[in-house]
Amino acid sequence: MAPTVPILVITGQTATGKERLAVAVAERLGGEILSADSMKVYRGMDIGTAKAPPDVRRKVPHHLVDVADPGPGSNGAGAPGFSTARWVELADAAVADASARGRVAIVSGGTALYLKVLLEGLFEGPAADEQVRARLSAEAEANGADALHRRLAQVDAEAAGRIHPNDLRRIVRALEVWELTGSPISALQTQWGNRRGHYRALLVAIRRSPQDLGRRIEARIHRMAAAGLLDEVRRLAEQPGGLPPGPRQALGYAEVLEHLAGRITWDETFEAIRLHTRQFARAQMKWLRRFEGLVWLDAGPDAPVDALADRVETLWRQHVAKTEPRP
Image 1 (cartoon, rainbow, N blue to C red):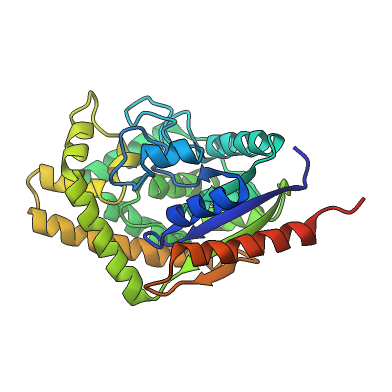
Image 2 (image 1 turned 135 degrees about the vertical axis):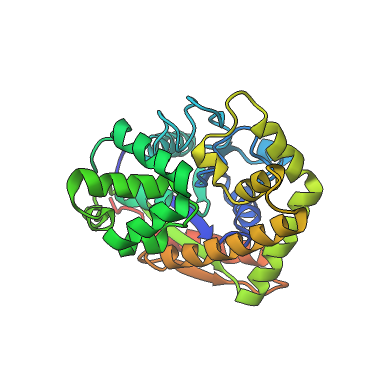
């Protein structure tokens, strides 16, 4: 792929309205959306991941959505065979395909690791060691993911600070890297640099006030509950083999699974989802602030999506005009 392909990245914290904005911009620019969400890759995980409904996806093509089954042995994100490197491989192919057809590739999502790898490359970490992973997973099963998270904080405080205590997959990987190399994963990740150079990317992020974001998070949880989140999680959990560790830790799913196990009431489930989503949003903001050249789109509570789309369209046309290679 030539190192001059322009792409548009629309990101932001959870519940800021990335999907609606990406769709509106895609309609204006003749674009196609590439999902940068580590849980939207899973088939059947629809309500809890706030996937665009089928009619929207028919109107605006979406890539990297529903590409894996969330079951043991699947090729889903976080499961064997579908690593972050695999995701970026598919993303590269989708960008190349859209570009070849004269379409604008719009990367939309809030999984900052995916965005970083897409734009900067994946660090040269050690290959997976299944024995180490199995031992760490067994420890988590016996003592809880938070026990492993506390251990990670002792050897790599920086990584522990940006990995949620319930994100078992990433905790295990960080401890695995430490055990295999003697170096913290946060130090190795500084090797990423700007080594890919495939794209001329315009990065924009929606930013909302904490009060507005809190209201939007609560409204989203109510919508998910009304749409049948409980039944969705129950159906996934009852499939052969249930849900593997990665999907089990997804926001909304982990808490509902606790409820289905009889450990918390439905009211406690709602409150836990709200608390964990707020915590996740704060972690996302820390990640986003690390992206160089990111353009913030400040949105008020009543800001219409069309007004935001106008701003992004203007920024995009300026970006293309400014960065277009000269003959």
